[in-house]
Length: 450
Ligand SMILES: Cc1ncc(COP(=O)(O)O)c(C=O)c1O
Image (cartoon, rainbow, N blue to C red; front, side, top):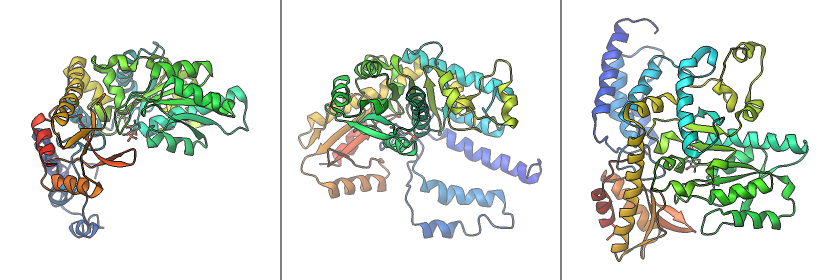
């Protein structure tokens, strides 16, 4: 299994040929995700088993049955949830990292990988206007980033006020589900702040705190820079001011929208983000990196380190290394893939300006789509898009019609565009991210609502 023998040679040829072919597909097929488990079971019978199989036999099953049962998140026709669109350079470098088992745990073991990752974190921190001392690490996703940051927020509050208190965090109704989940895991409770038009504002936060019977139990506030369902950017400057007045940890969840810090046309909407105590953005979303990759930044990383650093006799050595920066000290993980490196490689190859352009393309497409929807009598915009998400309704339709429309679009391999909900009503939703999604495709999808 570990030597370069005939089986290895055969796999190098066939697996790399498959990868090469996939990398050259433009566009990739959309495919279908959901399958009858019995059908998948039948195709996989005996895999794995006690006895070996030829690599081509196993790869054949993957290519013919399993791969088409995964919707390609990187297809320009993937318009649901939050899509992905890794660049060719990032995909290629990701393969290299896997081949070389590149990890990014400690400076002692992986200074080269960590240094390159840190340059990307610095770039993001600069865009956010965070101080030069801001730093962090890459984690697996926004959920892991939110959790790691909120754990630090809770510890900071505990250190100030002492133990024995149940902490709360102010969040808007539109905060991502992973935030509520993180609070539950950390045994903190949400103070739900009613927002104006789904946007958390400083004024809304202040009145919620003033009306609250126990404001001293608040440890933090979470603002979102690009809500998942509608792409709304909270009033970061206003929220930052209230956070400062009440000594709250200010966390900004930019898992989806944080990438648009690189888009000049909307950059001013992010004003106030420079005050964040912690901030996350998922490069596996709109910074065109492969799964799975989230950047987690702290204004004061030494506080995060004092919370997350793992101490054990066998780990002393990684903390004694001169000049050490151990990404493992800044989140709840230990072993980690150097998952920031595909982004470092891709940014270096294409240049940061190409990223700005690609992000602006999605924002532009959302604006054009909104204009197209306004032109059609049977359609109505739910709200003006701020980023790459467009929510709209087909007049007269109920949930069953939206579902039929979306199912047929997937069946015909036109698009993956599952319906969403807005204030209790089923609506349609475009999530634009791939720079190759075309207006022609948008029109084709809208025409099917006639
Ligand atoms: C605003 C926001 N926060 C957090 C997350 C969770 O990120 P992940 O799925 O990478 O864990 C998402 C995912 O869509 C998101 O949109």
